[in-house]
Image (cartoon, rainbow, N blue to C red; front, side, top):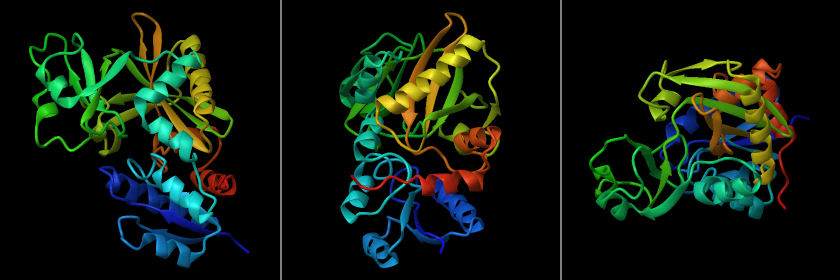
Length: 304
């Protein structure tokens, strides 16, 4: 008898639309593999009742952003007793908190950009770091809310102090690392390969990630072997140091001038369409999209 999988998709985060696309592709792949599937959108007030009524064997978490990948929905699933895909409560919460995650990763020997958490109003009043630097929410994914302050900028971005700022009251200010955008997916205990992302916008922002034609992927990346190996090694080390499970993706910046490789962040809920970065790498390594989602279901973690 095939397993019954409940797919959580949508949700309430700024990444809802992306999650809906990921979730639908996951549903199609699971059904093609013979699984019974129920789709549940946590935007709906009675989603937990829907989940309990469905009585799934496994929950596939296709949510992105807050609630989906910050440990909260994982806590609910632990409480309800359902095995679920991706990382557990602690690893999800830690990875979503960029500043704390980087503190752990530095202890593990990973080079990360220097940064500090500060009130968004203070950050809007004057430069707290010499430009160029990056200002971003500390706990959002998909480059949501990221602002690059270029070299020579006279003032910080006004949006940081605006009533229209929709994110947390603290922002992360980090040194801007010039260079090339690289990423590595980790599947269980295996780093897959290195992709170079070439955005067609000013930087690898939300539109570059998700708009059609927003970026090009070079797979595998044409970088020096030492850089390739370091990215592979650092991605696996980061996955393990944060206690992650299932599928993750680590994003890097490689500066060809200095030869430095910097880890920007680790994503515990990478995009899940056949052309998303992590599934694309899995396919390159011989694991097609339906087999990848089936592997995730069969390796779903039971509540601790």
